[in-house]
Amino acid sequence: MVLNVFEQFYSAEMTANGRPRHAALVMLISDSEEGRIRYEAAVTFFPYDDPEDFAVSYDAYFSKVLYDEPGKRSKKRETELLLDFRRIIDEMAERPENSPNFADNGTLWTPGKVFWDKPLRPARGDHELPPLSEENKAAGGDNEPVEADAAAESGRLSDNKEKIGMGRKNFGAKPLSIPQPVWIIATYDENGVPDAMNAAWGGISEENEVSVCLSVGHKTCKNFEKTGAFTISMADAEHIAGCDYVGISSGNQTPDKFARAGFTATKSAFVNAPVINELAVCLECRVKEFSHETCILKGEIVNVSVSDLALTEGKVDLAKVKPVCFDPFNNAYHVIGEKVGDAFGAGKALL
Ligand SMILES: Cc1cc2nc3c(=O)[nH]c(=O)nc-3n(C[C@H](O)[C@H](O)[C@H](O)COP(=O)(O)O)c2cc1C
Image (cartoon, rainbow, N blue to C red):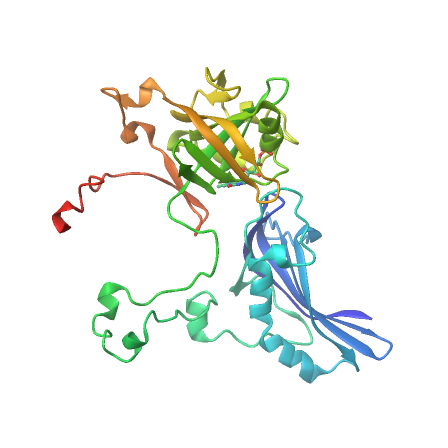
């Protein structure tokens, strides 16, 4: 007999199968059969588009067997299993690709996070979770920051600690950096229909080379594998809705996605790919290689073009471009702003 001995809905965050999720159902499940008892921890992330919507979808469902032995249900064991329950769920949610239930259909997944301090309903079942300590609650249920140096602990640095920011919070091994680019990658299909997608996990990797990590199933990948080319335009504040839209809808399902984003195209004079007229700064690239194993696309930059509207006396003027960067810690876009110094110059005073 299968039973949820504990279940609770929490506010949560994750993108799975390209769909943002804002709630999670977590469960401790018992399965008793012929004198054997099995316990599983499980979490499933679902959209929760409105506050009354608890319709769980199971395409982002992860579980882990915690116990599987001869015997029968024991409330004592269940209480024990719940002691470490949050950590186990956090681990599964943060690294869904390690879960046996993970099915990557080629769409980007972001790590999941359950907000343990934000339950959406009272718990159901025979148990409650042990309370979050007051301390943990303040930190959103995360681990205690780890001190950088034992010397700090012993007091040598402690006087200065707050001033120089010795307290640190660990976010774990995750693909987080500030800033990350907001690249709009544009391609043509075999009939010359343009598509565009948003990509933040990329950078300049060599002289005239870009590298970006792309899930193989994207329409974009199918396109550039046929045409051998793509362009990268820098997202900007004025077109933020269109730039985000191309990151949450796919040309696989929406063939007129490019136009819906409010974009128009001019074919690049250098490669068989569209330059987005509305975005000022564009890298025009030839595909060097795309590995289905590592998902890394490498492209040769054959030209960089910038709209006249973004130039002041022939130079690129960031105040006119208003490029945005991606903040992966908070899933947000920020305008790149104020100049604070000269590169290769601000440090000269310290030489
Ligand atoms: C902020 C943001 C950053 C993204 N970064 C990437 C990325 O680096 N790699 C990737 O494969 N998908 C990324 N995506 C997801 C794709 O843009 C998305 O799956 C898109 O629908 C693919 O479109 P296509 O199928 O039309 O090519 C990102 C989405 C957003 C909103």
